[in-house]
Length: 191
Image (cartoon, rainbow, N blue to C red; front, side, top):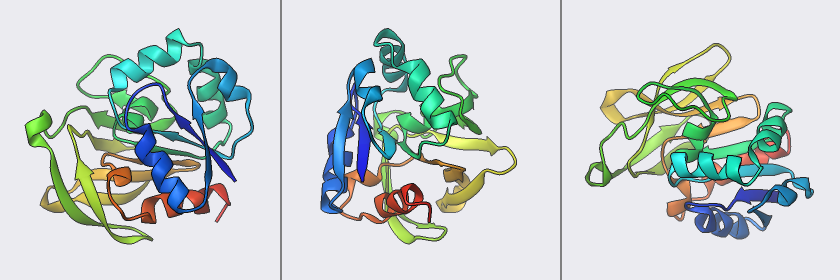
């Protein structure tokens, strides 16, 4: 099994380390030619969604990446990755891949000083550490999107699954816990 990690900007190395802990081989997606390689899933990391979206287009990666996800390639998206997948962004006119039928709010918890850490329950996984850094949250979901986690007392949606797409507002790659990445491996295996 091999996972392709989008490595144009953001926290991609941390995802690679999580996958290494699980014995999963990684490759980095840095240019359009990398999208032609063989892999079983894609990780869209946290970082700056506007920069990542621009680089995907500038590097000629956007259309093929969108096509792969739309055609069923399993994807795990964290923070900025969630924004890239979202069908709509309530506080921004820009949208990107639009493969995930949700509306997100960018920087919903404020800037860097609004970052925080909690332990939260994820449906089918249990309690996991959740690191929120200038995080979005999901304002609304359409039919067939399964809500997997909400944040504390606010009930803001922070993790969903839609078909082959597993997306969250927090950063599981910044913790020792591998439960989220294990769930992604199970999704790639069709479980």
